[in-house]
Image 1 (cartoon, rainbow, N blue to C red):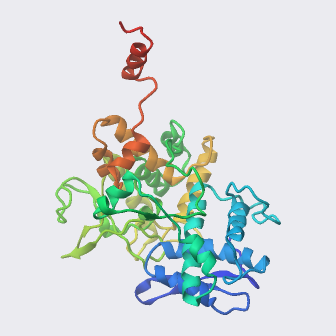
Image 2: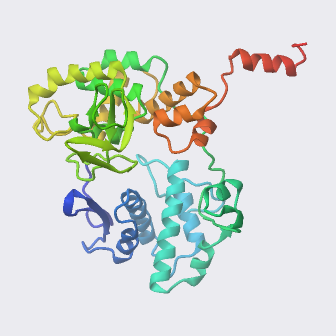
Image 3: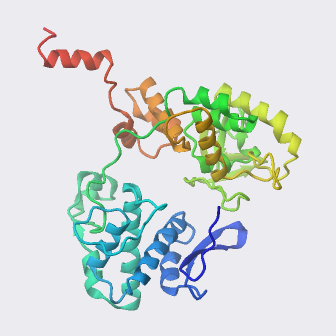
Length: 396
């Protein structure tokens, strides 16, 4: 349920030409916060603008309570805020901030909050020409790592890299991502109540689709036949295309170029479609989609209520999975991202010698990241057992 914020800082979504959206922050008196708006405008057109807006509005509310401004804030104040939202900080935080039902930020959220705060204060201090001390403390640099050199153009001449003193320590990549319980697919298919929901479970299980990309699909993006006219893939597949003007606000996270040539979608993120995906699609289209006469061209629609036939949102899909998981008595919360991890891990198990297979199948940006996260050996594999026996001196 949406909560209307009055007499406090709040995020305001703005509709732009062409169906695009921008985000800014409103002050308690209803005026635009010029300082926050100036910073958020530097991220215009990117997905980071929305994310930073919601992290920044939380900080501005805390800062208002503490009676601080950009000119008076000190580094210790920023450390206090990071501690108040969940970071491990060896100092008193003051009054509690994120109280139940709010939860402390996790490691990933803390990293985003640290990046947002650093960017906001560096931008504001520079623009207003105030608080040079804070600006200098946030502008520290560090020695480059081998990974930094590999990513940078002319990395061999790089001598320093920007550092963020607010970033949480020990924020390494998660080695074992959270996955659905064993047998989750079959249990969910037994628990769902519509062909649409069964199709969502099948498509999430057989691909590495993100939920924003799935709920943002249009019918024209689906090439569920051999040798489609796009020329991107000869097998049945689908194209995930970033469209900022979708009616349900669903948007693909990755934004590769795409175009329509002679009525055929080309480009975008290409995902192979399994026979089960094609079968579930036709079941949904012939039983539920046509019965509700959707005319907007999007794939997933609402099947009941006052908005029957309108595009189905990503939040609604998450809620469906959560409720189906409870009905199926599955342990833990069922999330779309968990299926993405399960699919990538399964591909790595099938082709363990080449992480580029899992990278391509899952549309991951880096084969190295896939290998680091998913390329761990099976503790019960014969090769693992044989290696231990040799080390223990039992293999001679």
